[in-house]
Image (cartoon, rainbow, N blue to C red; front, side, top):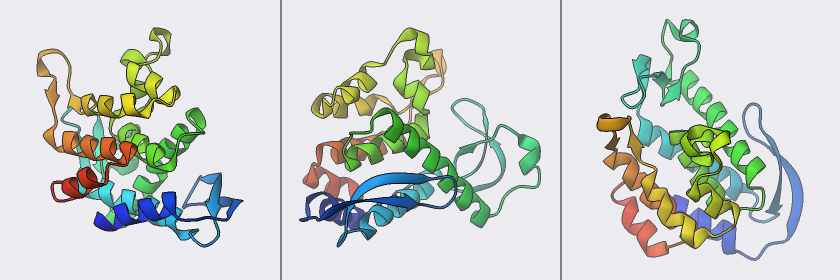
Length: 211
């Protein structure tokens, strides 16, 4: 995790000669991204480190298991399953990682689509949140576009990152009504995402020992 922090700062603050290059990561992801020649590998490194962190956060289950929050069947590393028959025989860790990367890519691309000018550290933080909560749930009140944007999404849409960062801490609850509970584990992850948005070096270092 400390290596992730070092990579973030190297990527964001090193002197760069910029170019536009097509980056393709695993399946179904092709992004035109401004990167620098001498630091080109940092994009991939940061992406890979976030995948590793998702693996650590979610844990592995080889069989279909109900999500404790919403009851939806999960498999592998916290992936919601729409077609249970596809995984009736379970999943291997290799296939689970491939599925995780494919799913994470979709969340990443959604963030880039809706907030194309967001800095890379902000994009990563919101991708992590989207993976846990769902992008539409984050973007629209009660997950319904007819209700308008959430206050948190509006802050990031307006590039008011100082206002939006603390709001991330509220996105760590699961369940509804009287069964609504805060996940302390996810709350710690949101604290790290908040620090990543604000580029709070000391807080990020402190949290690496807690995550």
